[in-house]
Length: 93
Image 1 (tube, helix red, strand yellow):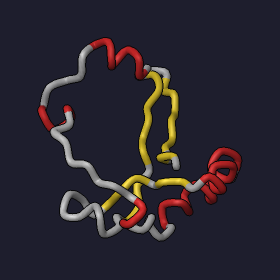
Image 2 (tube, helix red, strand yellow):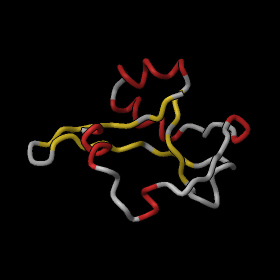
Image 3 (cartoon, helix red, strand yellow):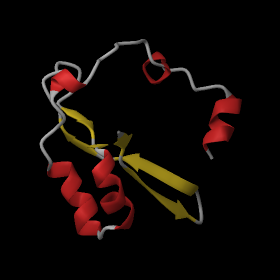
Image 4 (cartoon, one colour):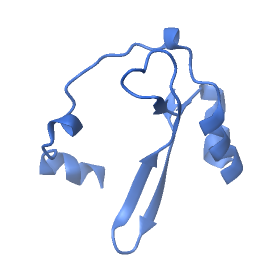
């Protein structure tokens, strides 16, 4: 599977990325009521080559069944309040 997202390059700030979300399945709450748009293998071509309407429609699909996922809770950096090391930030650009 893949997490669907979009990217646009702006002259003043460079590339900006956003992950698309959809209604969460039963595994995600109470953490959030949304989850990433996850693509099946047979959806990747439509995601990469479809129209903007095709892409937007992915956000309204039924979410993956919770039984297909393993949720592992961690103390992610984004929750720590500390910025990632510079080497990691540079590799994302």
